[in-house]
Image (tube, rainbow, N blue to C red; front, side):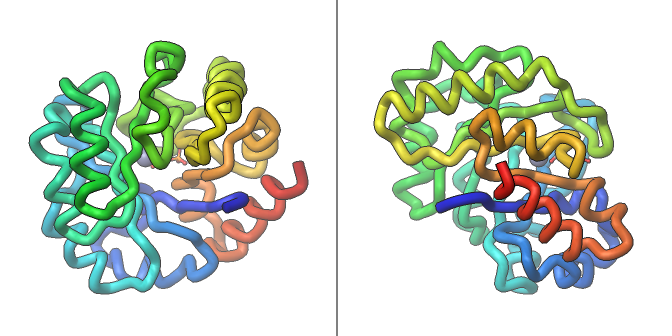
Length: 218
Ligand code: DX5
Ligand code: ZN
């Protein structure tokens, strides 16, 4: 599939979501951060907003659920029209069952790991996933500093995926910018979430293109 750029709308003007998404036509996906004030200390948006967003853009929606009990809530995001749904491993009680349920609903099933959660315990279930999301900041807020400590895990995750002969996408999220995107690409990431880097740029679409170019240059 190659390099993909998925801007996060967390740092966009949330009162003008459709317009803000219209500013990134070169993006591959729109990354929507759903937070419940329990799994992370922040509260954002939910199913009704995703439903509206799906109608207002041609870009596919990549939902990142930072919520407790995704086993219960994640399927509704598939039904709302998201094309990829990511749940956190730390919050799911039955990740294999949940990934299968999502795939049965014809969405891409994805699982996220916080910075301190090792990837190795999940090696045997990578085949159940379409994407693995490695957080490169503690989830909860945009605009945080990239955690270099995550780079070796990106490399190990890529090795596990390749060794198993899988085509699981490897997404990184948190502090991705022109400063950090190349290091992540070099370590093996191929899907890049960027929130503040894109939406604080004067020309968000130009930043999407620059991030893509930088990742592809590795
Ligand atoms: C953080 C979210 C991210 C966030 C990234 O918990 O999952 O998607 O929007 O924002 P930046 O790119 O500013 O770190
Ligand atoms: Zn995210």
